[in-house]
Image 1 (cartoon, helix red, strand yellow):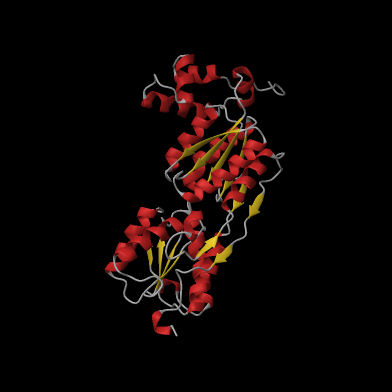
Image 2 (cartoon, one colour; image 1 turned 45 degrees about the horizontal axis):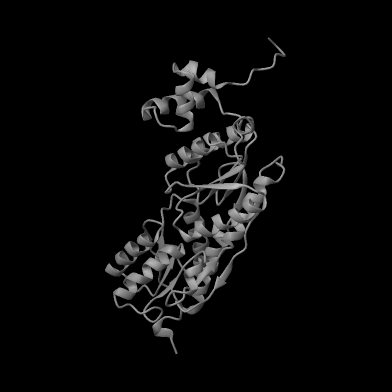
Length: 347
């Protein structure tokens, strides 16, 4: 009937549409034991198709749960995410919030599953930290889930994501890439290898774009700076460095697109008898805490990671805005012992 108020979808509606009991529907959507993975997936698919999402605030009142925030990161063992998590927890403590941390290992399907689990656990807000994907289609399911969560009263903010349509803290990746490349160019390096994670990640694409800008501005060709893709981890840095040593040609410097990869590369170069920075300069990105403690200390781009976590949660806790808010970070070049002029130009 025209003008009638549409009744909100209930869990019972999902159960009936999926042909299961109310208890089975509840366990399927909450990720509880007792339901086969295939059946749980079918029930979730029905819930998605219907547009069902539980009202998290009503459930919190009914269950008496503590106010909590979910933080989704790629790798909790990565110091980049550890420092972001510390910032989130600082603000969370100030507001009496419990922070649940989950990791995705850069798998879009696993990320979606972790977000659904947080919704099922009645969190009041969700933060997602870590690179998005160059292809926005990889994030469509997550975007729909977050839209439903927000419609039910949940709060959302992200760090380093471009395609989710929510409040975002955006690291200075393009400008930082340009800065670290300019530093090596000013030292006299013209043949530089780049150790990178998957180019399907926006963080990698942005940092590479900044490096390319600097190379072109100096009259060089970005394609002359080889990119070696590996896992965006310390082990990935080791693997990429080993590949570089097999055919390093006239490479005089390395830019690793995060500090974890740079530290992995340094360990391989040291074990292989390559002097840093005498034979090869090494630079990183992020400025994790240990960057000053390794030998040689690491030249890198500093991002305010702890502050990024603080800002993301502050955005999520503030009154919703009509349009998604964007907050960009600054960056700072930290010149340390791991970079110097090429040996041929050293005085």
